[in-house]
Image (tube, rainbow, N blue to C red; front, side, top):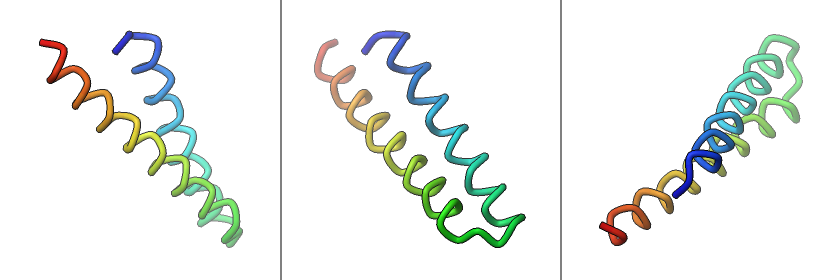
Length: 57
């Protein structure tokens, strides 16, 4: 897994956290849900990276 992909995933996770926080602060359930979805996608990608890294060693 390349450094670029890890940075993109971290950025997606941070974006998701920000969306969720803003959504919660403004009572915007849709934005909060989008934030949670972004975080979940980033976690799935990270897990796939970890598996790939494990098998590539």
